[in-house]
Image 1: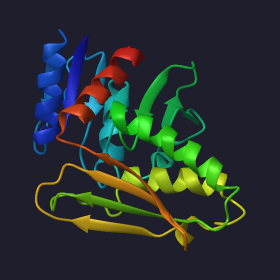
Image 2: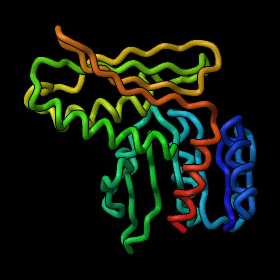
Image 3: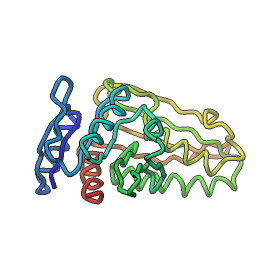
Image 4: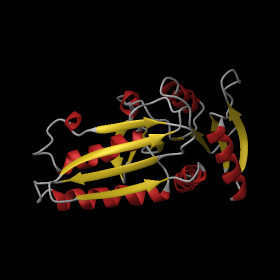
Length: 224
């Protein structure tokens, strides 16, 4: 598979390492100031910023290249148009063109472990919907360089709880999220259900960027 990497920072370098280890070819690395030439890539993997993600994806589409995007802090719905259909599937946002070809896969987190954590979160929320004495809250901790707050993963966790606990949390903003920025923490997410009697906590702790990179490459393999 021929892969173009859009955003060649620490995450981009990790994606390159993982992709090469799985036998893929990197045909282009696009960073700020570089020429935007995807050189016949089968797919682009995009991890940039909330301000540049949508434009980067549009540029890739202009070259006929589908995109796996992990940039958070923006809304993929801004790419929806009469020629593109948007749908949600397995904790991901998909956009297909008029021929039904998938042109965008977006997720707040591609880590295999986090996606298992998402399923645990939904399972626990369903159980708690019958236990009104428990109140949920979310804490997310990331490195000081992360631009968006709260994290996309925390928002996804909150949305999952909100969708199940709709009678209790009519506005998703009612569900408290604490964002902590310290050191070089790759990413820790904690969902707490608290009552006067006890507390239940589920936690995912990332040990590095490799899990995110591997998940993005796996998504690209599935797409292509």
